[in-house]
Image (cartoon, rainbow, N blue to C red; front, side, top):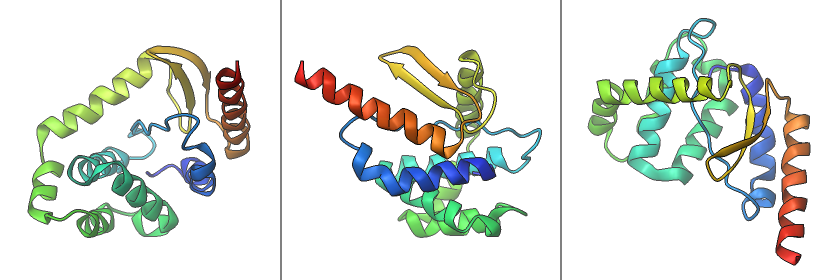
Length: 162
């Protein structure tokens, strides 16, 4: 959530979500790059806690809101936590989750998994079929990602007509 390039991709995804929703699953994987974005790991924990407590739709609304107000969250994570409280019903449980060593370990595990797929920059688009990685485009721009997603829609249509 600290990546300015991911912000652009998020905007493109928001604009096209309805178009893509019946063609493939969009899965957001946290990959905080703490060496260049020191606040990113905690933001990933906050966002994942929003998901755990309020579900997928609320998670994407939260992420979209944070990205659309990107300037507010650049200096510390206080603002991101305050916004998260508005998206979940129980702020006490939210803060319990944010402070959980298990959640921090989960985010670290996801980052390690991403590295195992050689995903080491953001944004990266990775296309899986089942458990198999079939396409990876590193440090993707929003136009490149949109072309890939549009191609997936066409491929999906062809597979359903054959």
